[in-house]
Image (cartoon, rainbow, N blue to C red; front, top):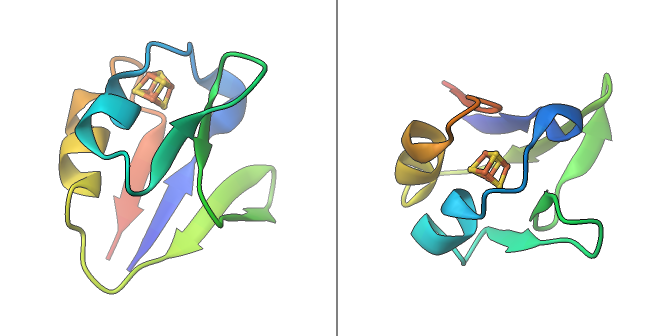
Length: 70
Ligand code: SF4
């Protein structure tokens, strides 16, 4: 599965970082970064084996910019 993060529309609330710091951190510009992700079609993308805490990160994002595609 993969995480698809529409970083452009992140509002920088920090909820994903609180829920899942293993994968998420705040960038210097105030938006979240998905660690080790690649750029794909204007989104940040990361292949993952298991959802883990990214499920909480996705569910807790108030603007729903974190999608998990199975
Ligand atoms: S939870 Fe969503 S809006 Fe908040 S920092 Fe993370 S990606 Fe951005």
